[in-house]
Image (cartoon, rainbow over all chains, first blue to last red):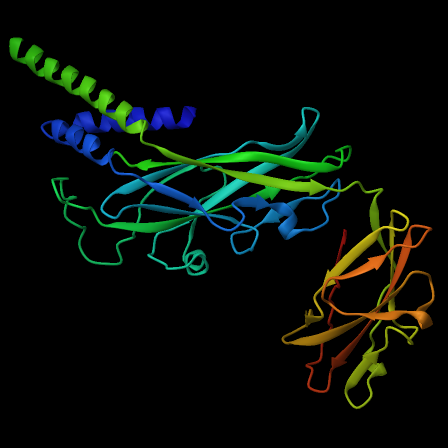
Length: 198
Length: 172
């Protein structure tokens, strides 16, 4: 959460440097904020480490990689002419109760190549380095050529084109403490998506 | 000076508008929660013990084929499951594994053969296919597996081949 506030502050300062264009950007924010972004978990909607390793014992570490079936997958549907900022807010542990926890390290990747299936999307996904919790990218990556013109301002009867990007969540669980109690350990990874303020 | 102040005022107004706009936009963030989960099993509940490794030697080949019978051969690997007495469980494994040549190029394809029984009696063991199948630990908390395999070395490159067999077990 602290990380998101600092990014917003940076953007505000950067925009101030662009004298004369500040007001136009302000108007844009208001317009795009009315467009919805739809996040949809695919499959089980969970990052289940037992999918990678059925039997998990104390002392062991399980790593789910991007290529594994155990990755959690989300689709993001939103405006094609806007960049989006994805922020991952993951707990540092999976917990059974207050006295039993397992260290958790979450990574994520995104795919914005216009793939029609999650399988195709995974093959072209961009992995974020360990420790990164946020990324800004367009819903559809520009393949080549010049940058696209500015977004069409919203007006009566205009429906902005939309597209779908994919988010993959994976990571490492463990090592399971040697004194960890047997049971079902869980935690929630919150994924926040908004249009980037550029 | 006056001009500078007017200019500064413009900046201040712009700043206020920006922050206000960002605040509004932040409310439009879409969020979703993904569950991360894992079930940990107590070590005391289930344990897989390797009693004897599967020993494959090129000298055992007949017409370029090595065949270690899980049911009959002494070279078969032996594993034992230790767990809750009389508990049902199932296993899964990859029936075919590529074994890389650790001393050079190439690899060999090893087709595993698995037999199992509820006591240490290889001759009485029954075939177990790779598909998950329900088995039962005996009243002493044990179950035995014998591992053999079929491998064609007739076209193999010279070298040293080492692989491993992974057996996954879960209670039902």
